[in-house]
Length: 488
Ligand SMILES: [Zn+2]
Image 1: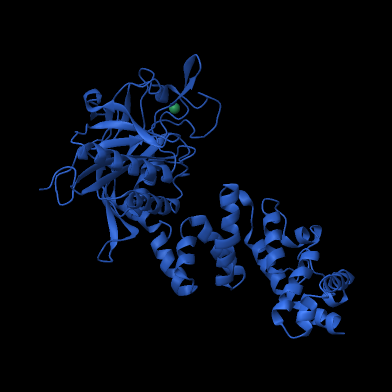
Image 2: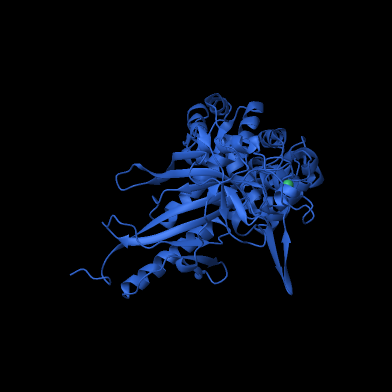
């Protein structure tokens, strides 16, 4: 007999992602969209919800929304309407949010995930809809009271709703990285979870394997990275399994992820859930989306990552993993191509970008644009290695030192004393001294071994010389000099 304690469960996950659009002005007024301005300095009667103020749709926001829809393979509506979603928050002065209820701008999309199913086919997740809405302000909780900053109120958002097609935290993570990758090419958002321009909530339920009906769903909020989304989903799946296996029942509720305790906790149950009383926004007429406009946006879309990936494999003969990596963000691929244009060595350049450059980006937790690295600088650095003025080790040191400085590799290398001057190692007194010292030091061991024909001992001696010279020489030049000194 199958009982709740022995049954196998599968997870059913859908994601709701909010993307803040980086239009110049807000969704329904001409206030500037900007992060970090003095509190309440970017407001007007419309976004403050003062009586009699009338909203006007931002055409740029609609166009950005169309771009998002096309990048997610969605249909674009012929006509859209806006609705009022009524609820109270201190940072929502109107008492309602303008959103789209039954006529989303984009619908019926699909995203292919970089994950295979058991038959080896790529997993796909449907995108149910992507609609436009406005953001609320921000409540700032301080000891003694709460302050409200309405700069963000009225900022345009696209909410992207996936179908409940995802079956694990790994698939949810793959969906989010693919979504972010596609959107990064459009130039419509900063897509920063830290700054709140990208936010994600997860709907998680479980059901016995083979069951078609959906289980009771729990909405999880408050995750601040893709990793915490995956952690929160895993926690929820385990929590729900434990309750059902113990014979308990689940309640439809909203839960908050606690990043410190790595657990979810109840925020509100269904009984307290809001009835939003959606109704058409009377101050905005239905809005026609002409096909010419959609086709124009489609024509002007940048090359999307799937297509770019194929081009990198075919044209530049990159390894799959390298090409995959270079298309994760538009600016990485753009930088790669700009560099290849100057110097036709795509594999060498790709290796620098996926190696040292990525290392630097991760270590400093910054975007490529923050590093002030020019394609010409990378080309000059590679040229210095090829001219044997830097070796592979010193080139990496110079690379990291030059980032953010705005300087080219040669002056940086010279200042660091890493540049091997044209005279060559054979005429460099520092090299002669280092070799003499090493031979003296290891005369009874490695030098003896080497003279007796053990090649490994030579490698050791080269390494010791390189250490003394702090890498400031091409190691390939050392063996003949060591040989002369050891055997001579
Ligand atoms: Zn305003």
